[in-house]
Every structure is written in structure tokens, then in C-alpha cells.
Image (cartoon, rainbow, N blue to C red):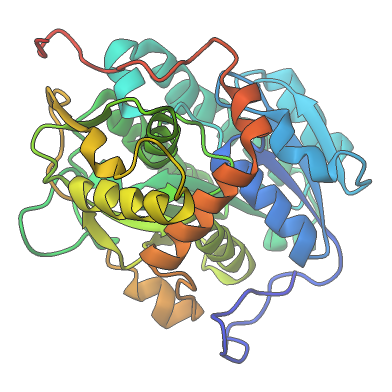
Length: 376
């Protein structure tokens, strides 16, 4: 599979793993990042995708509408915890690589109901690893050497930073929410399956993603929907919490690059070089909304901001050092926060039908994750 190098650069001096069409089992490929990755791979690579997704509330087949009739895309509704199904898909489709996006991923939901996060993120990842190990062990020598298991994780496993510094691939794990603890556990399982069994794994830990097709419980799409409706824009605490923001298409390019040329057993941090406080994110978005919706009766949209009780155990700051990925695989983000946010806003404004179909009654923008520790 051809590598994806940084814009304006020549090919990286890392041998490509495979040539010709590659069959990839993508788990969670109807979700936000997974769906964008499927679309990216089918539009830029000579690849065949077997897409396994449970279609929970955050999985949306509409995201994949443009590839519904593409013969290179096979969609299967199912659970990574179903060992018989996973084993059959690996075997029947002669899979060359697994990219694991399947996860419960929202911190607030993990506070309200952690059991689902343990079941999917820990037990499900274990099952996927073990089925993959059995399949990989039965391949011939060349296929075993070329096979990869890429696990997509999060910077939240590292815990919270002070006012300076950034997470590196060697930062000690210190997860603080049920979500991040479950992802940390899955990361450790992936590492163990490499060191114990030799499974050729890769792990990526990314910062906060944003962009098209994101479920509207997350900050940016939630603020867009509420601002359009003239509803209060809830900001946790004092709005000073800092995150690094990564445009989802940049993230997909990074995953493709790691899959093509990453070294088995290695971890690669993926960041957008865009540290912003939550308040800065909302203020920038409000200004863009004012510009994009000059006739809106809710202008200036910043007047809709409303501070609410902070999330229990809310980490203060995350920041990613992605220099290893940039140095070894010659990837850099192509979007700044401002260009990526503008693209994101206009995608949501131009795709109201998608938004309305997502808001099907299972989620209506209500507060999640208040937990027992938070008072109204």
C-alpha cells in the first residue's frame, strides 16, 4: 500500500510493507474517525475494506453512503466481542491488516455507565487480538511478515498535564476517567500480545479529533447545533481546560502512514499542534457562525455561552508531542485549527439532513456525565 507523506514532501525513506491491493478489517468503521478512515482509504489507496461495526448510537451507516455500492467496501454489522464472527471475517476475506477503531469513546457516558466501556474497550479488544493472533499464526511466512494490527487509542491514557510539557510515547499512563482507564487497559493488551506472542502490532495515541460526521454529543458539533437553535452553549467549569485539536482527515492520513510504514511494536502519538482552551474553541466557533449565518437572530452567538458545573475529574490539559511520527514517518498535519474548524462548520451547515437523522431520539443534546459528584 502506498504511504501517505506530508504535503509537499517526497516519499519517506521507509520501505513500504505491501504492494498491490490490501484487504483491511476495519472495526468501528461506521463511527466518526473509523468512517472517515474508510472513506479516506477508498479514495486514496488501492485497498479493500471489510467494515465491522456494531451500529451503537454513535455508528451511522449514512456516513458511508458514498461507498455503499463500492465493491471494495464490505459492511458487516456485528460486535468485536463475537469471536466466531471475527474469526470468520479474517479467514473468509484473507485479511492483510486489522485497524481497530471499535470503542466506546465519550468520557461523559463513561461516567454515567462504565460497564459498556469495559465490555467493548477491554473485553472486546482482547477478543479481537486473540482471534487475530490465531489467524495470523496460520498464515504463510510472507503473509505473517506483512500482517499488521493497528490499534487506535487516545492521549487521555496519559492523564493530565500541568501548564507546560507534552505527552510523548514514553509518558507513563495515568488515566483518570472510566473511558481513559478502559483505553489504557486495551493499549496494554495490545502491547502484551506483541511481546508475548509476536503479533505485529502498532498503536496510535491521538489528541481530540474534530471534523465531518462527528456525533453531536462532542464539543464542536454540539456547539454548532445549539448555536443554530439559539440554545445555551454549555461550557464546563471556567472554560480553561486545554486540549490539542486534530482535524480528522489529518488523523486518517497519519493512521494510513503508520499502517504502511510503522515499525511493529511501536507507539506513535498523533497531534494537531493546536492547543486551545475550551473557551477559545467556543469563541472561535461563535465568530465563524456569525460570519456564516449573517441573518441568524442569535447573533452574536457568543452571547449564548453559559458556564455549567464541571465534569467530575475533568483533566486540565492535554498536549501531544508528535515529533516521532513527523521524524520517522514524515507526517505533519495539513490543517491548522482555524482552517479545519471552518471546514467542519461548513460541513455541518451543508449537511443538515445527516445531522437530523443522527438526532433520532437517542440523544438530544442533554447534559451527560454529571455523575454523583456534580451538583446542579
